[in-house]
Every structure is written in C-alpha cells, then in structure tokens.
Image 1: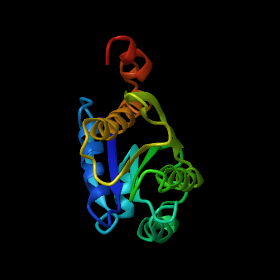
Image 2: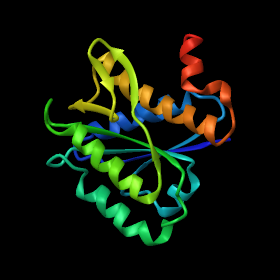
Image 3: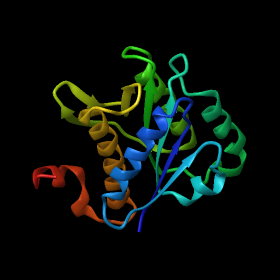
Length: 182
C-alpha cells in the first residue's frame, strides 16, 4: 500500500509537534505506512520510499528554514527525476499570526513543484474561520483543538490522495468521503 513521509525541521519543537499530528492524520487512513523524519535524520532514500510527503518548516523570514533548504540542495542530484509525480503538501509554524507561515508553505510548495511533486491545499474548514488552503499554519505550537485538527486533516488528506492515486482506492477520494460524512 501507499507510503507517506512526514519531513520536518523544528527550531523550537513547535513544528515537530505539528509533524506528529500530521503523521497521526496520515496513519488514520487504513493501508498507509508513515515515516516521521527530521531533516537531521532523513535521507534521499526516505524521499524515494514515499509516495506522498508532507514537508514542514518553521517560518524563517517568510520562507523555509535554511536546514530544510540545505536538505533539498544536498539530495537534489540523488533524486532529481525520480520523484516526479509524487504527491506533497506543506505546513509551518511561525512566531505569531501574520508572521509569514503561509508564505513559508508557498516557498516549500514551489520548491517541491520544481522536483515534480504534485502539490495541493485543503479547502476544508476545521473550525470557524480556520482553514489550511496553503497547508497547515500555526503561530507557536499546536495546542487548541482547531490547530491540532488542521494538522491531522492535512495528514489525512495526503494519505487519502496517496490511497486514491497510488493505490487506486477511489472510495477514499476526499469528495466521496466528505459526502459520506468523512
């Protein structure tokens, strides 16, 4: 069945906690195997292994962290052309609301598109006025129920797309599951 990698960098531990929730969401889809890796331990083989990937980074002046960028720079020669068509999404934690977390997600998504990843956002609202169009974004660590729900939803949606497009499990398509009550 499908493989999902949750890859993250975390300076304060906030993005690491988000990554744990994203991984939990991905694990909630039957038949999906999940690996949770920090950029300090991940390898090019982890990226080859996955069918779908959630990439998380702390917000660093509105873009991904230097460690996340370095990871992709270091492995690019190893995986270039091998990941085209894999599915990916992004998440980020910033120091405060308006701190650039959505811009960070966009910088991650732009980088992933350059490798050929198929990227997505999520239109679902997990709470009043709380959605994850560009990815899950938070100020600080995930504490509130809606913040945790955003991370879990992102991971679940990634796993659903992997199940549909990689494993051919059309019944897990998000539109169909939403109609059935998710």
